[in-house]
Image 1: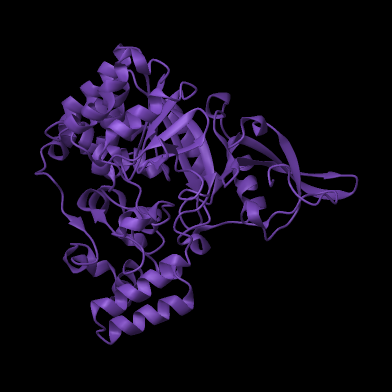
Image 2: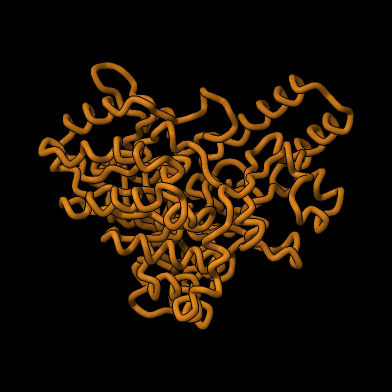
Length: 447
C-alpha cells in the first residue's frame, strides 16, 4: 500500500521510468546470452532454457527482467517461472532427445523435425478449438474466428498474434511457434462483420490473441469502430484480452500512440458499448510497479471495465495467500476478480497442473480471506470441450465421497448452471479424468 501511495505523492521519484528509451530489448533463444542478468544463471540453466525453447515459445523483454524478476531467488521466483522455460516443462525422454541434438550440433532440419513431433504430443489445440469452435459462413470455414458459446464470438486479429513476453504455461502456445497450420489469425475483418450481422444472438465480441494491445492504435480502431454502426447494436460488450499491463504497461502511458489507444476505448464507451479489458495477472507482484499502477489508472479513466482472469498454476501461484492478496489489490485498484482457471490440458501441463481437489482447497482458502467485493471470482474452472466446468467442492452423499461440479458455461445453453457429481479421485487433474458418481455410466453432456 505504501508503494502505491508514494507513487502518487511523489511521481518525480519514478520519472526515470517514464523517460526510458523505447522499446526495451526483447530476448529469445537467439540472444539469451545478451541478457544483462545472465550471470545469475548457470551454464546448465542456460542450456536447459535453449533445449525447451526449441519446442515451446520463449520471449521476454527488458521490463520484465528489470522490474519484475527477483534475480536473487532463481529459479524459484514466480515471474522467472512465468517467463523462462524450465527443464521440467518437457517429458524427460523428449528433453533428453532434444538436448542430445543440440549438444551434437545437429542441423536445423533435425531439430525442427523433433520439435514438431514433441509438439503434436502436447495437445496444441485443446477443447476442440480447431475441430469444434471454428464457425462456417456460406459453407466456408472462417479463419481467425471461434464461436463456442452462443453469446460470445472470439476474433484473432492478425496484427495481434504475438505478445510483449510469453507465459510459459500459455494454452495458446501454438500461436507462437511459426506453424501456420496451428495458428488462429485473420487479416480479413469483413468476414467477422458478415458473421456478426447474421447472428443477432451474439452479444459479446472477444478480441484475443496473442495480445491485441500489441497492435497500433489505428489498427485497433479499424477493427472496432465499425461495430458502432446500427446493424451491430446487438454487440453490446467488447472484450479485449491482454497481458500488456504486466509485460509492457508503457503501452498505455508513453508509447507513441498510447493516448490514441485510450481514445479508441473512450470513444467506444461514450457511444454506448461496454468495453471490458480482460487482464491477466498471475501474481500480485505484477501490479505493484509504478508503471502498472499508472496503466491501470489510465485505462479506468476511459470508462472501460477491468476484469482479471488467470489460471492456478504450480510453481507460480499455488498458494491461497498469493490469490487472496492479488484479489484484494485488484479490488482496491478498481479491477473486478473474474475467473480462477485450472491449467488447461496442453503444452507443459505436467509441470504446472495440480490435482482438482487441491485447486478447490486453494480457492476455498483464498476466498475466505477476502471480503464480498472480491468474491466475484468464479472457480476453480476448467475450460473443457463441453464448456466451463467449476469444481464447487467435495462432499459425501449416501456414503460416497464426490466432487460437486457445475457447468458455468456450455456449448448447449441448456447446460448452463446445471450441477453434477463425479467420483472423488485425488489423482484427477482434468475433466477427462473424472467418472460419474453413483454408478452413472456417463455425464449428461457426453452425448
